[in-house]
Image (cartoon, rainbow, N blue to C red):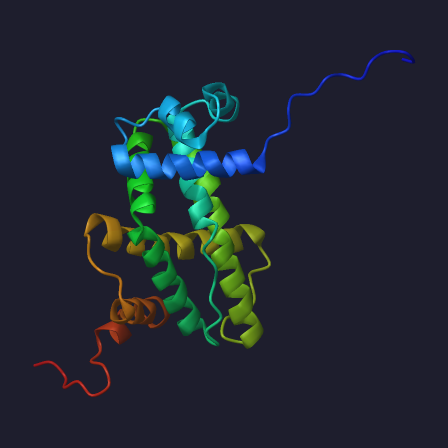
Length: 215
């Protein structure tokens, strides 16, 4: 209606403030741990009002998920010239990310909390798991263009199932070895894992070139 004032809108979110908050969250979590991490402490370190945090995140668990999700968004699929090289490259990149204290501390904290919080599990899936499936989609498409993999199924549901399985196998193996077993993911392990993934158990168990066969 003419003469009516335009509705007022809230202050737009500041990308710089968001970055400062997420950076402060990761730093504080490493320094003080999950139990002592508070929204007030994050706000103080980020130089913003505590109400600014609560307008964006309802609880510290949601804030920590988003703080670690942006680190996973930095992952890129290396182009090694072959499917085997690409898989080895992304495994090593993923493992290097998990070795960072801020990633390890944040991820283990929210995973522990999510065991009794279904809403938090859904947020982890949406913010981290589902977003990183892009790496599988990109890798499959690249390998298909090279002729290393067959085209996707005509059934989208079947393609989604395969992508989910590939992601679960790769991410699950690297997370378990890095965070649960606390063992290194080095070039030799990545190569053996990739052989297992692409060629099966028989190939992964075979002696490497130059090695004598077992007894």
